[in-house]
Amino acid sequence: QVVWRSWKASPERTTLNDPWARQAVNFPIDGGSIGGVISDGGNCFNLNSVVSAAPDGRYEERALGMAQYRNLLNALDIDSDAAASLAASLLDWVDTDSVPSPRGAEDYVYAVMEPSYRTGDTLLAEPSELRAIAGYTETIYRRIRPFVCTQSGPEVSVINVNTLPEVGAPLLVMLAGRELRLDQAMRAIARRPSSGFRSLDDFFEDESFVGLVLNQDVRSQFSLQTRFYNLATQVKYYDAVFSMNSVLEVDHGGQVRVLTRRYGAFE
Image (cartoon, rainbow, N blue to C red; front, side):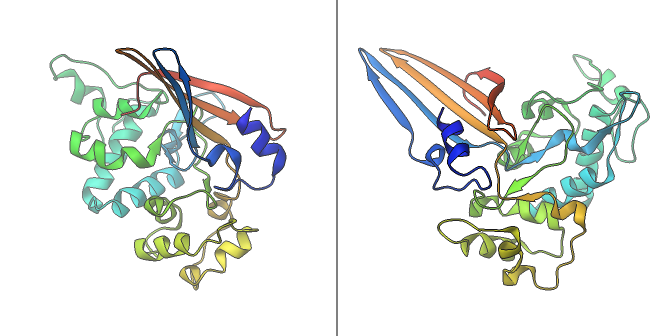
């Protein structure tokens, strides 16, 4: 209801002044409390976007998604060689074929592990699956986890510049590439009006983007609207604690539906 009311009040723009973005709600009950908080669930790199769906349903490499994933890894201080290997391993895990990419890892890598297993050959259901993929140490996983997500399809990531926090600046570098420095991206967010940008033209007029050339496909990944939301709920009842996280999607007509529910807190 809160997400729907926010959309109804401003269907063209989603900002941090909307009702969903205000402080967490907490209801006292006998012996405990019920609480919930909503956050923007679309400001992240969709791990599944490293592939696209072919007409026959097979998942094949998407060059744009692979390039943007490497951009993100570089922005998170992961060197180019390691970024290339991590991206290739992810691609081989998700794509349908069994042919290893350069620096990638197909079934033969996992077959010799104890216990042995195989690649998924399908889209990731949630980011924690990265832990099963070659090269993704716990250190690397923890570094990239706040910036990645898994959407239900392989669509490219769309970033809402009106709700992106400064710590999310690597996601702007992800889209724009190395021509945009991380400090420039952070300043662009810091200079955002308190009521949000009125248009994307206003956003791109920031001095950080002077001289930066973006093709139309990449420009379409910048937005003023939020499509996905995360809802984190927690019930405390005496000594018991129950947590659940849901991903909500808002369609163009403002209808809100639950995409996934996950019991337990996000990592």
